[in-house]
Amino acid sequence: MPITRTVLEVAEQYPDQLAIVAADIRLTYAQLVEDSRYMFAAVEELHLRQHTPPVPAAETGGIPITAVSIASAFHTARIIAGLAGFRAVSATIDPRWPLEHRVGVILATGIGVVISDATDLADALAARGWTGTIQPLADFMQREASATAAAAPTVRHGNEPFLLLFSSGTTSNPKAFLKTRHQYRENFAISSAHLEPRPGVATLAPGPVSYSLTLYALIECLASGGSAHMADVFNPLEMAARILDEKITRVVTVPAVVQALVNAARRDPARFTTLELIVTGGANLPAVLRAGLADVLPDVRLISYYGAAEIGFIGDSRDGDGTTINIYDGVKASIRDKDGAELPDGEPGTLWIRAAACSDGYIARTTNAVLKGSDGWSTVHDHGRLVDGALVLVGRAGDIAVTGGHKVALPEVERAFEVIPRLGAICAVALPHERLGTVIALVIEGETPNKGQLLTHARHNLAPQFVPRRWYWVERLPRTIGGKIRRAATAQLVARGEAVRL
Image 1 (spheres, rainbow, N blue to C red):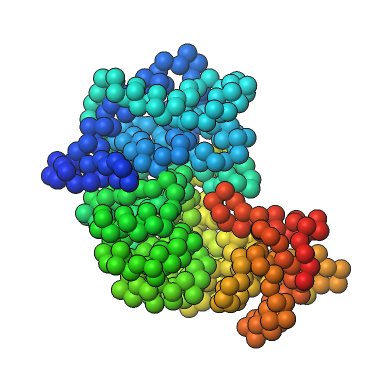
Image 2: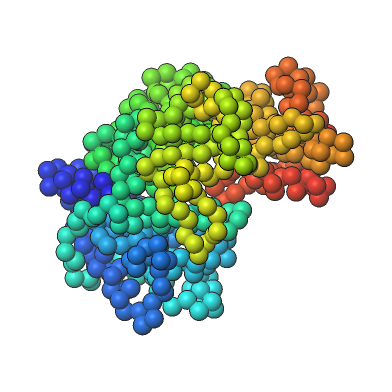
């Protein structure tokens, strides 16, 4: 993994360079190296003292797995970064996941040690026969303080797995997969060429480290010799103060946080004078959000990247709504139908990617889903089309509806309404229809909208088959723990009669 080599070099040459920073605590590169020796010693002792330790998933090659499931982004980052220089596989488990999901991934993957303050987790695991160890953060830190330091961290072999990740944890059973150090080195080679982590750069990455976006922001900061500024949650006023006080030049976050930063900058633009770049993950960045940022902070650039945790970085967008992606050099894309046949330019289908950073596959104990085919191409079942070499994203498999023989991308329906002021959050769904098979419906959250105005807008901005035929209002749309709207749950809500027909 690139961070260990860089961490050791920076610790020797610039020992006081900040590595990981929270609002009230900071760790230099020299401290990170020294801290990691006691941390690994404490983790190793917890694993070794188990009489019948859990058997880690075969894909780890027998390396014990340590999971962190706490609210503190700083300590999660400290532990993940510290263990990277040793023979260890680390995982982050969102403590807000449903209990059954947390228990399920721990049992399925053979995690042996869990650092967690959750009072219900130990009892639930014991009831299922788990033989591992739960350690509250405060107890773990005491154990670190009394440990005999291990040997110094070293640069490990590229084929060694070091990080266990999960594809989901909110709407279905999570699928687990491993990243080797070589795969992350390949991933960093792409992100460092396009997303501008630089030596000494102060990057703010607010949010749980269990989010792959936040986790990778941490890794790329340390891999480049920069400073990773962490925060448990996003608070606009606190973040604005930190950007000013810490001279933050780069922010890595989700689009919703960008809107909050824009709002904060309108109130006090002087707090954002050091900011140069915002990097967002995921697709469908509203064009109105990019325009709002340009209006209030015209010198701040915005890059919206697209990737998948299993595969790595795929490409980015630097204008518009983030759905037209310029594919990175070294990454290949193919659009295929359900039978695997390649589709021509402009035809929507399943996106397949070939990239050196891609994981080898999912942990067999967690799913029978296939990530990578025998030909080396991989898919997480996103949908899109290729147009003149660029990737136009459509969505996931559940984001495509067929109505009257026409394929309709539901996210494209939603994007047509993002320009309407004061319209609440929206979700387009496909509902059963006797004659057409399905019809498109738009479900709107918040204040009751004017259906006539929305219909007129839709007819002027959408192809006929994309215009919603039914309109509904709800007080609140179903969301994942991470705040994303759950399309399938929204459709079920409508089917149960729990939405108001407009």
